[in-house]
Image 1 (tube, rainbow, N blue to C red):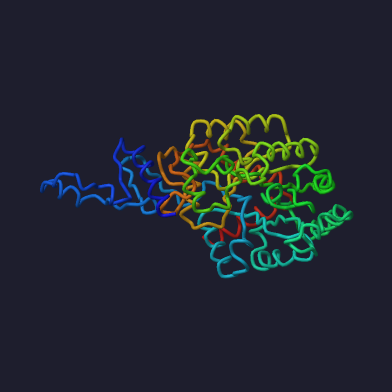
Image 2 (image 1 turned 180 degrees about the horizontal axis):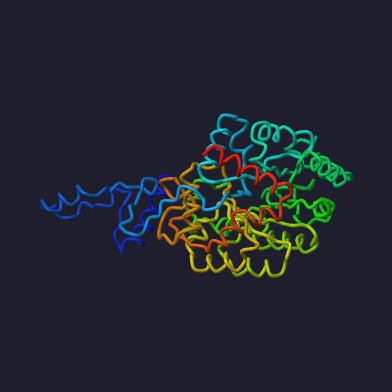
Length: 415
């Protein structure tokens, strides 16, 4: 792995420094080289010939505008958070993040980590006993149920009564405060049929689920596929090579996986079949690399919406197109982060949406975790910010508007 990272650095630095090559291999110096002069020795002492990609921390020489935003302009609804997955029942960390929400002007978070069935109240108790007005909860379908996770033949989702049972679970959870459903990317990329094939997103067996959510007014936040680079060979042409080299399990190229285009098309067929059901397509419909296609989908499917979570890195490297898109489809875009994150990352969301700052990080991590680039702000008009930050979510998510108003009062008291 170290050799691969060093080789990538060789290519990356050569491409970005006008030909300067930093080698990770001291043996590239051959015995035939002439003796170094004193000046050459001094120059060699000022550079690191053993630098590897994992240690590369370039510091930009650009002197641009820096707008330090400590909070969002309007009280925000974050429609994409994971308080179960990330906090794992830690009440102290939950309380600490609610304090961070107050500082950053985040009124309400949508936690996507509820579970249909008996476990639904476990997650709502964790969030609502102390902070009822600050959270709404979406829940996931339990595909395995009483089956064995390593034996798909035994999974509940392959029983004839599965659809009916899930509908009953949805109706029961709705009475207890459920505000929507969440579908993970494993739906299409991980969950399997008894013969070992992958469950299809548009399988007719799931129609009762989509239909019931439409009848109850429950939106569905669905994560389909992943970044485009994850479906390409992990080779020297892949712009996310470094990330995939750290997480080879994130690659969906070959190995029996459907293509990204197949997955997105299957999701869109479901959206078309169920026009009464609202679908919030996670991570900019997982196609921020191609905003033209996302725009075409939004025109074609009036019940389709998108949210920003973990994709300002993609949007911010195309600020002209992203700004045009966000303004044009301001009624169809919701705010999300994929958090809870460290507070510094939250500030990058405010900076991206509210300023015209140039060339700044999209993550608090010292090394860019999702691509070798920085981002540019899109400086959205205030009316557009209001729609994305909270108004669109209020229209879509049941129970949210009342909590939002109460949350604003709580934040005013705590200031």
